[in-house]
Length: 343
Image (cartoon, rainbow, N blue to C red):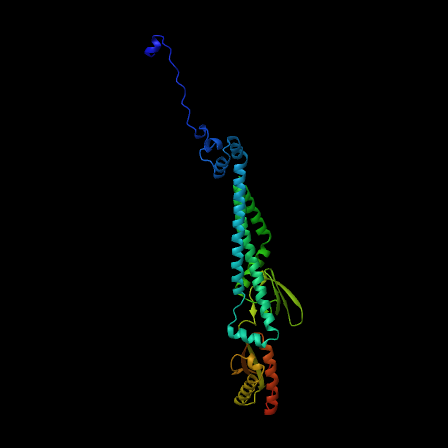
């Protein structure tokens, strides 16, 4: 025991020291807002009103909700601006990509030769740009607005972990349930990006061959020579042959009697092909001088001689039919016998 206690002198109990609180000082924004670091809006209300009760009401009931609302509005506005910029960039890129892979020379000849070709080429470019642009814009919108939505939900105090977990599970389930659709969409997207074919092209996909009438991300619509319309899912196309891209080649195998002089026949074929190329409108269809490659095969009592002409895309059939007619007249005049090759 202490000396004072032993002699019976009462001790004065010292009060417990209280922590210093800034808002204990009257007439300050810290006191009015009840916060050591008041927000800008609370300080502004105090500086304007100089009223402690009103400032405390503002800090208790309006300050945080208003700040949250302003944050939500700012996030939404920024997301809209970013989305608009992304959409503009995607539109410019897709319009450039929609020009396709044709060279300038071939494209100009295609415009001047094909009937209605400017409209066809414009339709192809427009469809590529529209389809590809819409997909990329949708993806950009989902990413940007989704990020903004999660940011807003987080600012409202929601626990995003269960939402993200549920979305992951749903995404996996949908992915397993719609594998074929996803495969079709991915195949269609890469097909458009690489410009494998477009509206107006003559393509062969193995199961069908015809002219492409419409291309979407999921399916390709084409019409064959008999007028039958085929709908082919893009994911089912393993390989495709395009007869209308960049340039084409008309290949004619002319069978003549085996007793004919091959040099004479080759001269007739070369002269006939040269005359065809010199006449309008075929002079704009053929890209290079025709060439007689020579004897292609010996088939029974026939000799097969091959003639080739490099043409603008899609006109191989027209030039081949015209050349066959002229070759038939030239053979009749020269007394050359056309043979039927053995199967």
